Image (cartoon, rainbow, N blue to C red):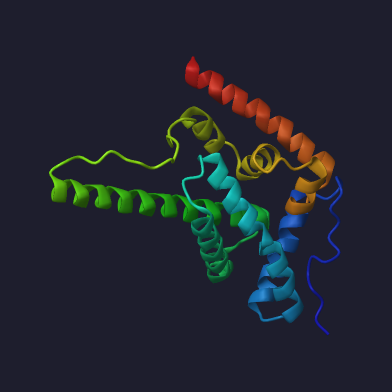
Length: 205
C-alpha cells in the first residue's frame, strides 16, 4: 500500500518552510509516479487555481468575463499538471501554482486586448472612422503603482495580500488554503504590508 507523502506534515508554527516544501515535492513526485492517492491529494491542492484566477481578475479591474475567467482556471490547472515535473520544491506548491495562474492570466488579458484592437482596426477601416471603445472595462493602469508594488513582493506575500483584500478571507481561511498556521499567515501579512508601504513611498519619493 502506497503512503501519500506530506499527509502527516505538521502545519503549526514549529514547521519550517523547507519541511513543508519538501513534503510538497514528495507529493508531486509521487503523483508523477502514478500513485493514485498522491494524484488525488494533488488534485485537491490544485483547487486553489480557480480562486487565484478570480482574485487576479478582481485585482486588475475584472478585464476577463466570468466564462473567460473559468477557461483561464482550466488552462492554468492543465498547465500545472503538464509542468509538474519542473516543480523543484523551492517554494510552496500553491506559490508555484500562483505564478502559473498569473502567467496564464496576463496572457489571456493580452490576447483579449489584441482581439479588441484588431476589431477596432477592422471597424475603422470599414467605416473610415476611429471607433470609440464601448467597453465597461476599467483603466488597467488605474492602480499601476499598487500593482507594481505588489509585483515586487515575494510570491507568498502577494498571495496573502490578494486573499486578505480581494477574497476577504480570514487569517484562518488563508492558512487552510496556503497550508500555513493562522499566526504564520498573520506575520507574513503584516510583513508584506510594511514592504508594500515602503515600496509605494519609494515610488512617490
